[in-house]
Figure 1 (cartoon, helix red, strand yellow):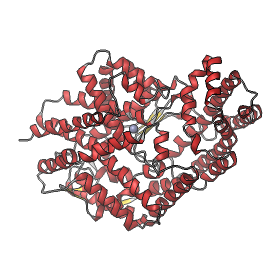
Figure 2 (figure 1 turned 90 degrees about the vertical axis):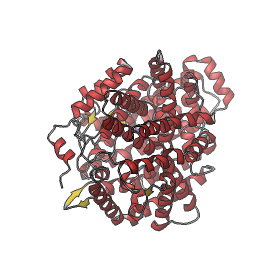
Figure 3 (figure 1 turned 120 degrees about the vertical axis):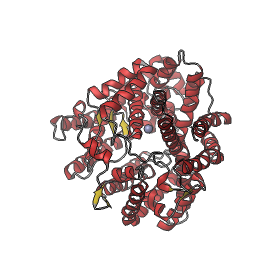
Figure 4 (figure 1 turned 90 degrees about the horizontal axis):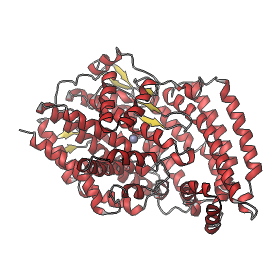
Length: 600
Ligand SMILES: [Zn+2]
């Protein structure tokens, strides 16, 4: 059963990334030199600064030098981490690469253990003394946002020894479980009509135009995941317990508390978002899936019909070069500067495009360090959705380049804005594709595809968040069985998708392949947050395009130097206003209205 799209694309020579701007290979002698230099610089850093900022004998110039030195060491460490991670994510089942990755993790954990005193001691400086230092040395003020971010964790920090123990133990606890999870997923095969497929391939076929192929893929996915269900259940329980232990030691009020702090977001803003989305399940997902069943001429949708294309005819594969042109020209129309930055990713092979065995599934843009460049990983299969994923990841990549000018400590964007450039890039690409089409059938398909994606980003991720909350909360009283977790999964999915979608037992193990649950608990709400926020931003752009791109590029270039509320203010937007989220959600409702009008 060769999939037409897969076989068509395999004839095209899809580019793979070139990591030379980091290191030439895992045997590059520069790696050992860098590790030795990191150790030497760390040793010197400890000798120079340990104990200084908790004494009374420090001055503001010393604080500034310490931050600069710390930044430089983090940059060198970051290069090693980026290189080993990127290599690893492409070769998950290669023993030599796995050993190299683990070796770097262990080196870096040891270095971080020596450096941990610095932020702990910075957090012992009294606020008024820090203000005096800012006044004495104005260039220190630049680091105020970084210091504020570090100091948010003051109430949750432990003694130096305990912090070091937690860090060192993480290698054999949470990180080890994550690694086992990732390597298990990558080694799995899903048997379908005599073919052995990997996770990317089988999940892709669950969206195939032919309903029977979708159903077979959904069954193969279910069967493959069920075979590892005891392991995934054990990993999930263990990680939730591990998190609880650490949360208790650190006095976090709830499982999600730490995530909100990392994101620098007020819990009530997230709650307002969650409430807004849940209260609109009916108007959004329930209404849409009923409409989609009608469009597909089905009584009801099965779980795997949600993202099915409207047409039975397989979509013509979009070549990689064509995808590049579509995305770059959408960016070009919005901002030539953004297109120019985006073009570098293609010209310099910063993107890894094809589906390969042993490569991680999904897609990401890894920001690396300011002195190098970001890298994008895709599993490109030529669908319109894959073009949207390219637009998404390229948005991240452009954002990472713009923000890197702030330097390592200040570049990273809080999660609240981390999905802005990506989702905005998708919206630009979508609008430009829609504008170029007059055929109602094609427009219907494009609109439905966009609504599918938006519901996956907003409604589905909020359902994920709901699921995760319950798993972590219930795990606090006892270990959960696969049955318990499966029930929570089915229940939260049913609520979100509504009566038109049948969520039956086949879907029971599908929570196991959502890797965010493993790697970044509660990350998922950032997608809904980003999507709604971008919808509001995009509405501002539609109403007043003049001067928008410049302000938007300023927002991206700010990196982590400003709070999201301040950045939004320059567009007249306020996230703590309950209406803000409803505005964002109205955009999805409008697309559904437009689609309804195209239905005869
Ligand atoms: Zn993203």
